[in-house]
Image 1 (cartoon, one colour):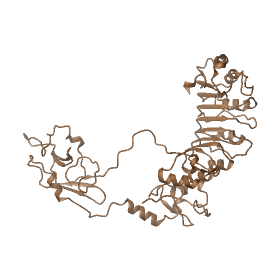
Image 2 (tube, one colour):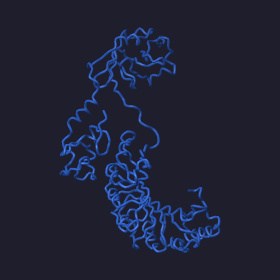
Image 3 (tube, one colour):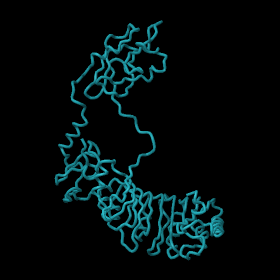
Image 4 (spheres, one colour):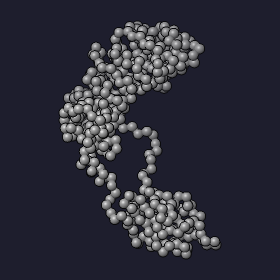
Length: 447
C-alpha cells in the first residue's frame, strides 16, 4: 500500500513519518509538522491553523491502522510444520540422527528447529536440500550425508552453516542452531558502495511557455524517485512554488539564470540546505541568505547577503562574483572554517573583495582571483599589484593561488609572456610562503 505525505511525498511510517491529522482534516507526516517552513497553513488546502507540537496533534487513526496491518506478519496458525520436510533431514549413516526434525515458524517471524541432538547442525547442501550434520561424531565413525561429500569438504563448514527456508518457510539467512533455539529473521545485507544522493534536474520538458510545471515534476518524482536531496538547473516562473513543496528536504540547490527575490525568500526557509549556487538580478532587493550553508556560489550578491557571510559558521567553500554594491569592510572571521575562496571583481570593488580575503586569511588554503594578464581588454580586471596586495593580506594558510581567466575567450598563447610574468611576480611577492600559482587557461589540464 502506497500511503504518502502530501507535503514531502515520503511514505508514512510509524516513526518519524507518522501520519498526523491537522485541524482542517488533512494528513501530513510528523517530520513535516516539525519543519519550520510549514508555518501555520495546511500545505494542501492553505487553511490557517494554530501552531502546535507534533505530540499535540492526533494521529490519523485509519492510516496508522493500515500501516500496522501492513507491517504485521501474515495471519497464520501460531506454529506450522511441514511433515514432509523430515524425510529430507535424515542422515543415513549416523545412528544418533533423529527420525524426525521439525522446523516451526512462529507468528513473530522467528524460526525454531526441534529434534536435533547435541552436537548436530542443520545445513543446506549444494543441491538445495537440508541435511543434519554431526559436528561431534562418535569415535571411529565417519560423518557423511546422503550422497554428499564428507565433513571436510569446503561446501560443508561448521562456521557458515545456513538454515534456508523451503516449502513455505522464508528464505532468510540464519546462524546454525541447536535444539529448541530460535533463529531470528534478519534483513538484507547493508548497501556497500559510494554515497547515494538523489538528484533532480529541471529540463525544458518541465517548462510551459517559460513557466515551471510543478505538477508534472511532482508526478514524476512520486513515480520515479525517492525524495530528491539535490535540485539542479532550477529555472522558470513559479520556481518558488516547487521550493515551497520540496525545499524542506533539499540539501543542494543550483539555479539556472537569474532568480527573483520570491525564490530567495523560499531558499531562506530551507533549513536542510547545505550547498547553494545562485545568480541574483542586479539592482533588485533580496532577503538574507540561510546561515547554515557549507558551500556557496553567488553572483551579483547584495550588501545584506554579503554581510551574512560573517555569521556562516559552517562555510568551507565560497565563490563571490560581480558584487556591485557599496564597498564593505569585513572583520576577521571567528569561525576559521573557510578553506576555498573564489572572488571576481572589478577595480571599483577591489576594496571589498580584498577585505573579504583578509577576513579569512588564516584558513584559506586555495584562492582564486578572476583577472586578466594584461590591460588589452580594459583595465577593469587587470591588477598589476596583485601580488603585493595579496601578500599584505597575511594569507598564512595559502598553498595554491589560481588566476582565473574566465574573462578570456582563448588560451593565453598570444599573451604567454605576460601571463608567465604575472604568475612569477605574484609568486615572488608571496615568498616565503610555499604557494603554487596557476592559470586556468595555461594549465587547463589542472582544472
